[in-house]
Length: 534
Image 1 (cartoon, rainbow, N blue to C red):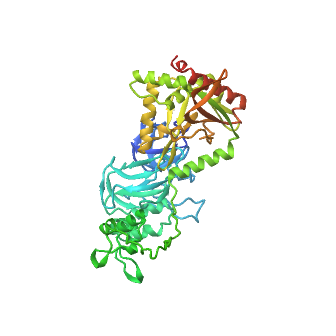
Image 2: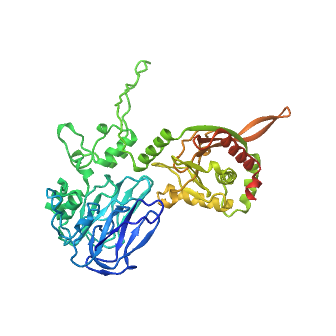
Image 3: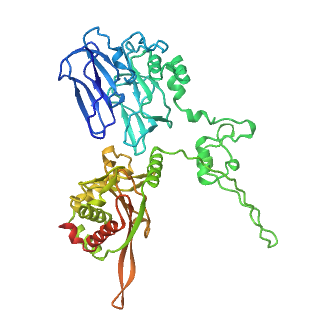
C-alpha cells in the first residue's frame, strides 16, 4: 500500500519547512533510511529520510517552496499504484502526475499538468519570525538573464532588515511578478526560472488556482519585451520633456534639487535643450533682489507659500513595530517603577577598566551586564506570560534597542550574565554596527528574555518604554542620561552624578514588590561596580 510522506516537525518552534533540495525524483526506488530531501527549518537545514521501501510515485512540493507541518509532500509505493485518494487535498500546489480528477468531485477543474515544464517558481521566502510580506528593494537579475544556483536574485526589505534572495535553480529568469518597491506576501510567487521557452504561464496557473492574473497574460504574450516594460516604471510617470498646458520644462533631478533647496523652479531660467531646466541651472540660481524701500518706508515682504504634504509608505520594519507594540499595549498589563542610581563609582570604575580592556566599555555595557547579574538573582523577572502558564527562563538573553533610520531593531546579547564586560562590549558594538548597516540576521534578533532601551545619549532624563514582546519577556528597562546634580548629606551640599531608570513590567508576571527588588539589586551593582566582576 502506498504511503504518504508529510512535512515533519524538526524543531520546537517550526511551523513550516522549505524544501531546499530534493535528493530523489518520481520513479526512483528508495529504501528506508535513504535521504529524500533537505529541509530548511527556522533553525537549520536538515536531512529528511524515508521510513519506507518503494518507488517515489509523487512529489507535491517544488524545490524552494515552503509548506506547513504535516502537509503531504510526497508518496512512496509500488510502481503504477493508485495514490490519488491519499492526497485528500492536503498537498501543497506543485507539479503532479497527470491524472483524472477523483470521482468524488466531478465538478472540480482537472489538475494543471506541470510535470513536463522545465521551470520552477521562486516564492517570497520567510526571512524572519514576524515577517508576513516582503518588499522587493531591488532586482539584481532581469528577465532573460542566465542565473546559476547561488546567484543573488534580489534584495528584499523585511520587517527587520534588507536581505538578499539567492537562486536555487540553474536556468534563465523567465518571469518577474513583483516590481521594485512593491510588497508580496510570504510564499507568493515572485519569479520563475527555467529553460528558455518553457511554458511558465501554465506553471503560474497551477499556483494561482487556474486563474492567471492579467499581468501574467501580458508578460507571456511578449516575454522578450518584459524586461523593458518593467525596467523603470517610475520614470514613465513623469515625462521629462512635457511642455503643454504651461508645464515647466525641467529634469527630474533639477526638480528634486530645487525642492530640497526651497527654490521656486518656475523662476529658474533653463539653459538645456528647448529651454529645459537642468541641474546646473538650479545649482547656479541666484534669487533676484526685492524692491528697494522708498522714502524711508519699510515694505513688508509678501509671504508666498504653498501647503503640501508627503505620503510616506510604511516600511516592513515600521509595520512590524506597529503590530508588535499594538499587541503589547492590548495584552500586557503594564506598570512602571522608577529609581535614581548614583553613578559616581561607576564613572571611576569605567575609567580604570578601559585602561585594561581591549574594547572600550560604555555605561550602557555596564547597565546590560548589571541587568544580566540582577536577572540571575531575580529569575521571576526573566519570565513571560504564556496564556495558561508562565515561562521562567533559565538563560538570560538581553535585547538591546537600537534606533536605525527605518525605525527600531532589538538585537540580542545571549547569555549576557556570563559574558565578561569586555566581551559584552565587543558584542554590543558588533550588533550595533550590523543593525545600523541592515546586516542583522534572524539569529541576531530572536529569543530576548529582557530588554534595555537607553536614550541617555540624547540628553533624555527619564522615559517609559513599551514592553517589546510580551510573549518573550515581561519587563523592559528604560535608561536616562547621567546628569551632574547637587545633593545634600549631613547638611552639606555636594556635586554628584545621577542616572534615572524606569522598569516597565507586565503585572500578570511581575508585581510591584518584585520589580522594586530587581531595581534595588541593579542599583547596588552599579553603585558598587566591583560586584559586576565577581
